[in-house]
Amino acid sequence: MATTTGTSNTDIDPPPSSSSSSAKTGFLKTCFNGINALSGIGLLSIPYALSQGGWSSLAVFLAIAAICCYTGILLQRCMDASPVVATYPDVGALAFGRRGRLAVAAFMYLELYLVAVDFLILEGDNLHKLFPAADFRLGSLRVSAKQGFVLAATLAVLPTTWFSNLSVLAYVAAGGALASVVLIAAVMWVAVFDGVGFHERGRLVHWAGMPSAVSLYSFCFSGHAVFPMIYNGMKDRKRFPMVLFICFAVSTLSYGFMGIIGYLMYGDKLMSQVTLNLPSGKVSSKVAIYTTLVNPLTKYALVMAPIAEAIEATLGVRKSRLLRALVRTALVVGTAVIALAVPFFADVVALTGALLSCTATMLLPSLCYLRVRAKVGYKKPWLETAACVIIAVVGTAIVVLGTYSSVKQIVQRLK
Image (tube, rainbow, N blue to C red):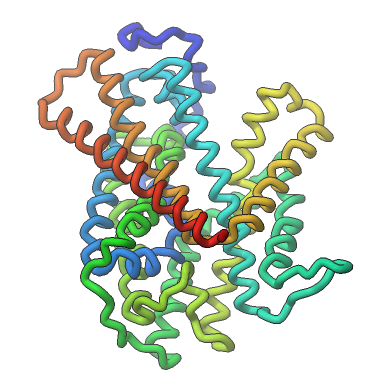
């Protein structure tokens, strides 16, 4: 490790031997990987977020996109400061030692775990939309259709988490960008050809819902955990800032377009996922819902794998297939319990966005960069320091207000 960092070698593990240039990705493929990283279930809740904050919240949406793009560049600069930094936790270790690594890893894994919970809630909501009269009984216990579908989704994804080779799922899940295009096209078809139209005017601003809107916006742009891997896989790393600009531009346009058309279609009547507002029985609605259902099923195991591997390494059970299966089963059961206990998609996504995504995309990159810059003695203008401080302050405000608002909403719904 570079001696200028002042961090001991025990804080950062050396990266694996560098692969040949033929294994590196070109510019276009790197852009595709980045867009896939930013494409996700946030697309479903973005119209609801806009309805919560009003039209003026689009300015906040654009500001968050710009901030997250900039903090992605800050992560790149942190990685450039040391040749052994390969992952986001490595950046935390470079900046703050072992505690930094643990803090970054904790936020990463908690975010991934809540995303897995969101997947199950999403499956339950959308399957219930397709089959609303699927309630059943287990003895004297009545199980609602939504609860039954959450349990069914849990059973469907459980075996996929036991696989040691997830390459097949990775190829399917890589269609996230394509799934986003199909979903947007299906919603547009509903508006233009299925009689819904764009008749709602919406509100200019809704201050009471602004914390929820900002939290949901923050969730949409949380791809920083994979940016270091994308950066390390590039043939020409100097073009990484351009990759980030393209990825965030495309994602901002797709999220923004979905938010605008959804708000114009349904206004303040929007539900937590725009697919739940679509008219039943229409082919376009079914295309949108089935597209929504497939992606989480393929991504669940990929999201859960890093958490499981970290726990297995800590417990020393990586060589035991049975114990590994038990660990992963326990993790899956945990997500199902949370999804059944707190089946509120938008609120859980907002909590994830405020508490975890915002921390990972705004607070940690800014603080890590300021620390690394001080260690290596970068000579940078005061304007950059001011920008990092402002981003950290804004991020802290979103974390506090967004988390409070989300928890308050969840508690009220549970009453």
